[in-house]
Amino acid sequence: METVVALFPEPRQAHAALQNLQARGFQREHLGFSMTDFVAEDELAQASGISPEAGSPSGSAGVIKGAILGVLAGLALTFPVWLLLQLIPDTRVFAHGGVMAMWFGAVTGLVLGGMFGALSGSDHGDYVKLLRNMGIPAADAEKFYGGLKKGYVMVIARDASGTRADEALTIMRRNGAVRLEDALGGGRLQSERGTYADVH
Image (cartoon, rainbow, N blue to C red; front, side, top):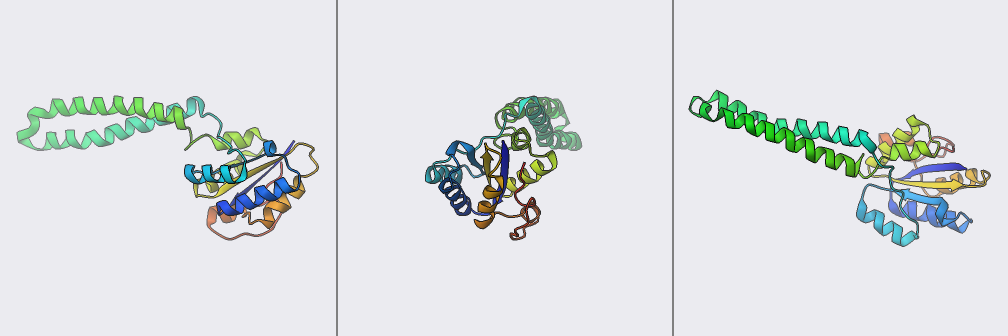
């Protein structure tokens, strides 16, 4: 099965591409899209009848990353308080309380960060992992995810027969898909094969 992935600046362009793909015989179950705006994603799903693609579960990497960030955030919030207690002579008696606050901040950050990391992965799912599972090279998957984080809509078309990927690519281009480089650099669209919508 070949997969065509493209980025669109606006949900209406993605909607038009999905409609045209369906009109050309691409089955709903072989189409998908993703975006970081949950409200707009729900609106597009209702308008198009296509289910949004969820990122792959983040696994232990998301938990570890979240926990580390949580500890750092907890310490960043409480260390200045402890430092002030040390610097002001009249408040040194409370310095032990500052140490306890730092410990509490670190532990709370560890727990909350780990929980959020487990629930969310990278934003609302690991899209790099999702794309790599579809056969997209890691470098391109990172670029697509970078565009997604910038507010672009990612549209995915799977060609079960392996013979209609070029057609899907052409439909996406006609409806305003942007090149990967332009999505990351803020430019406008071009129509060069394999740059803004890679076929795999």
